[in-house]
Length: 63
Image (cartoon, rainbow, N blue to C red; front, side, top):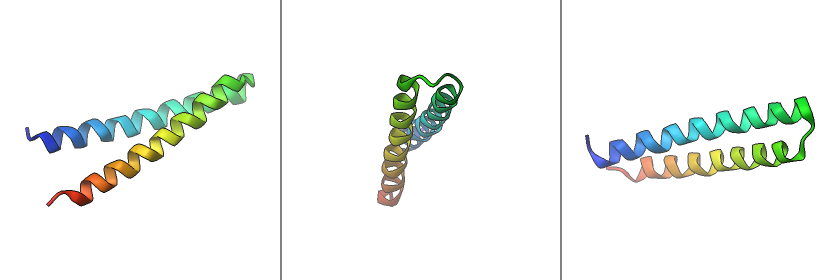
């Protein structure tokens, strides 16, 4: 396996897990109203966006 393939798999799975965690935390916020869940959910979705942008730019830089 090439290093770029491993990197694509790792970053892609991180995007999926960040998105899942963000949705889970926002669902917890709606259920309980805990501010910490709202903050964690928003930060996780922000991380999803950042990693998604990074993955897209990484894929465009490949030959």
